[in-house]
Image (cartoon, rainbow, N blue to C red):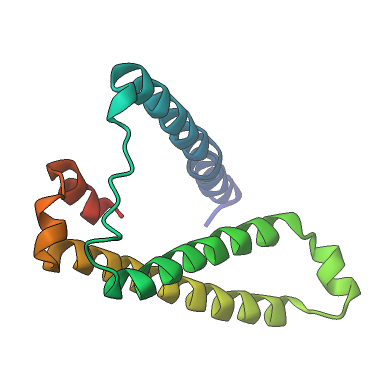
Length: 146
C-alpha cells in the first residue's frame, strides 16, 4: 500500500469516526430533547404513570431492580471510563490490560443484569393477562427497540 492510499484510508476512517462518535450522539440528543418537547406540547396530559404494580408483583420484584441497577451500572461504567484519565490509572499501578479486563467483566455483569431485568419486565407485561389488557399498542411497538 502506498503512502497516499494509506493516508486516504486514515482520512476516510477518521471521517467515519467523526460522524459515528461526534455527530450521531448529538443527533440522538437533539431528537431526544425535541421529541420530549413535541410530546409535551401535543399531549401534555397523556403522560401517565399507569402503574401495574398492584396487578402483579412477583416478576416486578426481581425484574425492576435488576433492570434499573444494571442500567445504572452500564451508564456509570461509561461515565467513569470516559472521565478517568489514563494517567490516573497508571499512577495507581493499573496497566491497560488490567483496566480493559476489569471493564469488560464489570460491563458484562451490568449488561447481563440489565438484559435479564428487561426480559423479566417484558415477560411480565406479555404473560400476565391483567397487565397485558392495560398495555397500549405503542408499548408493544417499543419492546423490540428496548
